[in-house]
Structure formats: C-alpha cells, structure tokens
Amino acid sequence: MRENAGMIRQRTLQSLTRAVGVGMHSGQKVELTLRPAPPDTGIVFRRVDLATPVEIPVRFDSVSDTRMASTISAGGDPGAPKVQTIEHLMSACCGLGLDNLIVDITADEVPILDGSAASFVFLLQSAGIALQEAPKRFLRVLKPVEVRQGDGDRLMWARLEPHNGFTLSFEIDFDHPAVDATGQRTTFDMGSGRYKRDIARARTFGFTKDLDAMRARGLTLGGSMDNAIVVGEHRVLNADGLRYDDEFTKHKILDAIGDLYNVGHPMLAAYSAYKSGHALNNLLLRKLLSDASSHDFVTFEDEAQAPAGFAELAPAW
Image (cartoon, rainbow, N blue to C red):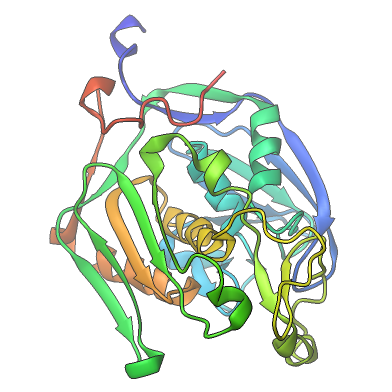
C-alpha cells in the first residue's frame, strides 16, 4: 500500500486492554475492556452485563442526558440501556487520535479512575496504537455556529468557528475564592501535541456545599479526593493541591474535547466557550449538524496538506 504512505489514516488499538474502577455517580464497581475495531466503526460501547448485550455507538444524537456528565443511550432514547460519564474516555481517544474502538462495559457508568483523562491515555497507549488502511475523516466547520443560554450573570455560550486546525478556548466564572485565585481562561491548540502533558491530567472538581444535595439525588456516590478536586468554602481541600495553576479551566477543556468528539470525527474548528458544560456542548453539535451548509467532511491523502501537528497527533507505534 505504498500509495497511502502519506495519507492521514484512521487509528485503532493494537491489542485489547482492561481497566477496573468505580463509577463517579453510581459508586458501582465496573470493568472496561477496550478492543481494536475495523475502519469506520467509530467508538462503540457494549453493555455486556445485560442478558443480551446492547451496542451503543457514540454519536452526537445518542447523547440522552447531560446533567453532571455526558450519557449516551441506544438510539438516544433516555429509557434505553445507557452508558454514563463517557467524556473523559472520549477526550483521551480524541487526544490520541483514536477513531475506532469497541468498549465492553459491565455497568452503566465509565469508571472515574483518577478523575482526569490521564489514566485512559496510559491504558490506550499501553495497548499500542495501530494505523489502519483507511483515511481519517475530519469534520470541518465552514461557518460560525453558536448556542447561548441565560442572560446577565446567568449567561453562558459555546461557539464553533472555521479554523485550519483544532483549538479550544474556555472561560469560567464560579465566583468562588478558591477558583477565582486560579486561571479563569485557558486556550489550547490540539495541533501542539501537548494534550497528554497540558490537558489530560486535569481532574474533575466539585464543591462541598453541593455535595449533600447531590448525594441525596444519588449522584457523586463514588466521588472522593482520590478522583476529584474537592473545593471547600475558601480553598481546595486536596492535600496535594492542584496539578496545574489553571486546572479548573483545563478540565473544562478536557470535557469539551470529549463532548465534541461525540460527533464521531476529529474537528477542524476553533471552539470557544464561556461557562459552558455538557448540555450546551451537545446543543452546539446538534445545531452544527442540523445545517448542512455549516460543515463538511475532509480527508488528507497527503499529510503535508493537513494542519500542523495533525499527522503526528499522538505517536502510533
């Protein structure tokens, strides 16, 4: 296949790999088995704990719940079998350029592991990344698309604009002394090759003032300082402090990378957001995909034509 030597190709794993952990919200023990998959499979979760295993392909319209996490379900039906909290694993897959993967899961929630994407990056890299004989398809944004909610202090928005590459810019405003003391705005360029170093280790975070209410609703039952940044009234309570000066905004970027990858393809776009979250990120994808003139799909037969850094994205070996 010499003629494809310069093509940017799809990627899968070289071998299967497993992880065991607990679900952040359910507190349930769960096992993941990540398997290689053929070209154009996409990323597919399989609920192997059910009497008849159910396959749930990751798509923007299979997202059925966005409260506290991104949840997908069969056919996007909230009453169908589901998998919750997929965003950190999806972020790692995007960061490593993985296109095709079967994820067998023994419960309805992806394990939280250390609360970041770093454990998933390690798992996927230890399985090895294999190049496939099929061109990688990028979703290219052709015109600006924006979603907004609220106004005044409650305003939040997310936007995608045309860009020859993939950059993300996120601004937060929690009006909380511990968060205000850290970076409030972060910009990251996916073509830099620094996802693993600069983004993947940023952990999810929560506030002690919200904890009791969330636990009463059956949420964060598996949460602890081992897998989240816990923010008290005035300060971060974790003994080791923060992994990055701007870990809060970096985690929001990590989540956004995962949420946007639910579209099934890497993006060529500039994403920017203010106080966005899983719900707004998914609305943004739905708005983008509902307008055929706002996007197209491209492949690169010659990696020299691709944006800088995209052919090298996460070394394959």
